[in-house]
Image 1 (cartoon, rainbow, N blue to C red):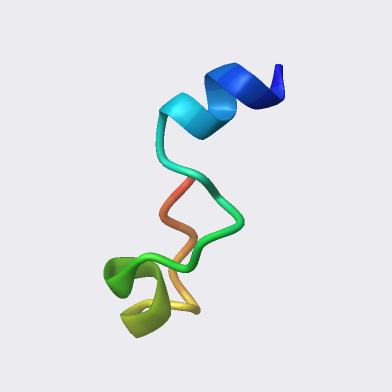
Image 2: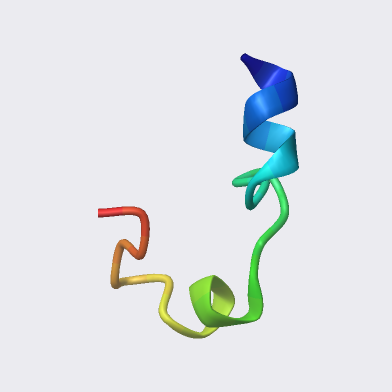
Length: 28
């Protein structure tokens, strides 16, 4: 599973958009 997740956008790495909008859940 980790391999598939890693191939896509890794949630572990805080994306610029996520960092800017922490209050807004981008994954939802």
